[in-house]
Amino acid sequence: MLTRTVMSAMTRRPLAFLCSSWPWRALAYLLCSAVYAVTVCLLIYTGYVFGAGAAFAAALLVLIVFSLSAAAFERLRMRLVDRMPVDDPHVRPPKAGLRAWFVTRAREQATWRDLGFTVVALSVLCWMDIGLVSSAFWLPALLMSAPFQPSMHWADGLPLAIGGVLLVPLSAYMLAAWAGTRAMITRAVIAPGEAEIIRSRARLVDAFEAERRRIERDLHDGAQQRLVSLSMKLGLARLDLPPGSPAEAQVAEAHEEAKRVLAELRELIRGIHPQVLTDRGLGAAVEDVAGRSPVPVDVDVSLPGRLPAPIETAAYYVVSEAMANIAKHSGARHSFVYGRLHEGALILEVRDDGVGGADPAAGSGLAGLADRVAVTDGVMTVSSPRGGPTLLRVEIPCPVSG
Image (cartoon, rainbow, N blue to C red; front, side):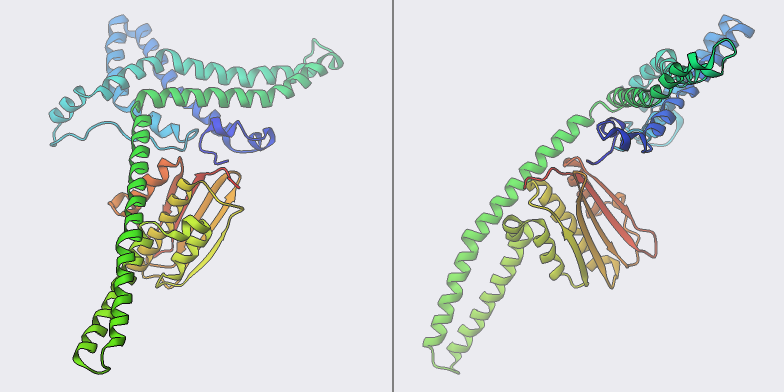
């Protein structure tokens, strides 16, 4: 399955987990708490050298400084064990200046949450992290060194050494479990509204998709059928008129115009929700989009079966929007679409040889696609340096329905 957190990595096969980078990422995440531990040690040393008053003043200064930077530091280090980004909850001050910045920060709940988290991190969490890392290292090392101890015969120490070796993978799981738990606690404190935002976004997307399907049905069963009937009647009326007469020419022109409107309406319906996606699935729908693209497209989408409807819809619109952007902005001469289901995740890539420079943060349609993918618990990444090439990659957790 798609591995985005150290907790989900622990659910993989033991050998796959232990041979991956996740245990080392968890270790690096916990070792970052040394920043807090060193700070506390410096405060204790300040109190020992300069007295309690100096230590108290230094502690206040540290709390102020850390409360302004601890959350940013935690968001940065969290990427080691949780690939889901954490947005900055702080509001940008409406005007420049230190006073405006301070007033804005003082009025925010996020600032006081950061302050409380800093106190807990300095007093409890950092020592738990370092204590766990120390025990995970020293206990196996101590047991493995038993045969080499001068006070113990090597045969007596061999079982202890074997036990120490067996403790190494258990220590990796212990470190990963605590790192994942600590990351979840941190996310809940510094970004408490994220879960509700994701749920609200999912509800909006579901409502939008239902409305999209309703509009598609109304156009398909209403306006399109009437246009088909009108086109047929104009064709029959044209046959009853004398060839070459002015009336026949006008009816012929109206007939052609009705056929053009009907073709445009069918294209509009296909854009709202393609029938081929409903009937034949994602692979056929991607082939259909590629066939209508003005830029030559190679398609390599191989799926073992139908995917859940929300995932197929999200993936289809990723490809459709990417193809539209390639045709409008990239200047590409060729593009490529790749799709596979790998370890319970839909992997979708769209590449082109255009000029590059695509940026989801610039307010383009890519930002909307990233939101749609995020609702399905997926991740979208874009690599588009100036001069190209551009690679859009989507990973969506996806069980196969058969």
